[in-house]
Image (tube, rainbow, N blue to C red):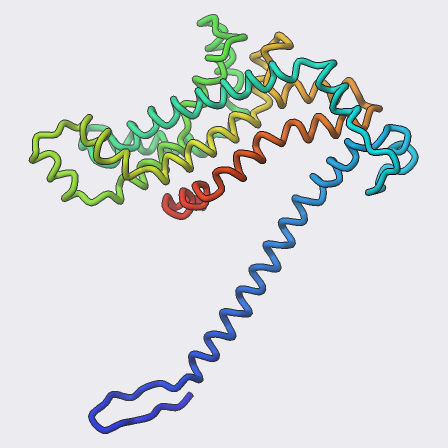
Length: 294
């Protein structure tokens, strides 16, 4: 690396450093693209194989399970799966439960995050510690206490037994608290001087600025609620009231030799989540980038 001097001017670095930096950036970009492509293939290949297998006849699958081609493509596995099982009810149950869980989680956890970020009250540190402890408690460890609790209040077999536990999401509280803490205090003080109540500040000042956090929490809550398996399996007993993961697990267990139907049910279960990610991928990236989720 060399420098050049001009009369009355400060030393200026030559373009050697810029070239070296450009090469390093290109190498890093290629490495990142390679890793991204590799991990994308790790996820995409099993999905494509399941899709191809679901379109093959069972006799061909039995003869050659790992083949990627068929001489007789058919949708019979999908038609039989949809005809013999109440998948429409399972989709409806999963959609209602996931949507209501998103609404209540965003409202409740944003209020808690706002209080922890901007309100000064006795015991705020203890509440924050309890929320952080909730992040370390495994979900499986709370199944038995929750089951006894909901049985005592006669909510087993209802949607509320799945919605209410989803509202208590420590990660959502942590996301909202971290994001709301980044809002400048002078903005809050200016609203207070104008006579705005804390409720008005929360609803009209903070929440419009929290759209990335709302998007991240909403999407993560929807996906986790849609994919929940253990708790819905214990709570929902009737076949028509089951969710997609629970219903499809029973279908897979009862159709051990019908490989095409098993793969068709797997594809049908992942399609809604795939649509959510394709439609809201920009909001997911913005929410993760601006709320500090790692």
